[in-house]
Length: 424
Image (cartoon, rainbow, N blue to C red; front, side, top):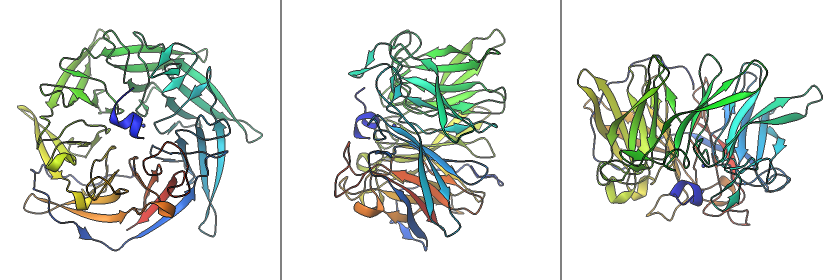
């Protein structure tokens, strides 16, 4: 693995239709009254270090997530944050990964099923092959709660790095039948990544099937997860590939015979139109897709884009180009509110030397968009290097993680990462 995402780090109801709008040039960010607080600061061992992914709520308001390293064995952890009546939160480690036959190094977040089981991916472990200089080429795992309060891990699939894929970096999604879908950065027929499906069997086992192997042309190396539309089509991004080798947005359509057809909806140009998307995509109620690019735009600081479906195909537009003072280089995707505002994080700011931001992007009547900085990270106790997507609760509060600025382990200055809340 040698891409930016790997080695520099890995929901509410929608009510209104968002207009299909065209790009604006970046403007100076505005300020908005809001409250930022750290819900939990990690210590490395035994609780965890470098949470890179978004957290997820259960029906009781508990938050669940992963840390890339740390935990009791230094190989990453799954954690739970439970809210207390006084407004504080209590952290507990549900599982600590260990090298090497076990899963280890989770980059992505988790999903919950109706029974409260947790599912996720790790980029290494599984005891098969060697990927990225580490033992094992990654896993899909499940955590099940036991009556005594402990959790049991089971590995649903161990990737070989061969035709079945290697090193899943993006989060999982599920369909109504309980099938799981995601991508791998490597492996497949050409070694350039796959889209896979895991199907549960009656005996409790799972069967992996590769839906698509990337071939380099027109796209390759997906580092994000997928989104599913109402008709069963899958959409995602690739970090590389396309006519300028700057990444793509793709669609996979299921065919009656069980095969899938791949189509590139957009190839990034590597310049003002964006480059190298690392983010998952989201839909608005009108069926428009939104995402971010890590590079391209103004001085290679990244962009926010939209793809709008129409009778003649999909129309691409840049909604926003980041500038140094506003936060730069978003790694992950967006969340949308009922008014059509978009929220996200940037990993850097101030010429690439800062600690990142939480931002809001609001549509204007004239078709432009205005960025508002909700929080600018200072490093240290408030966190730094916000690599994760955000989630919203029913009250509109935003939750995310910081990884600890530019390092692979804890230190006295930047800490080991945080879980935070932003209240508008």
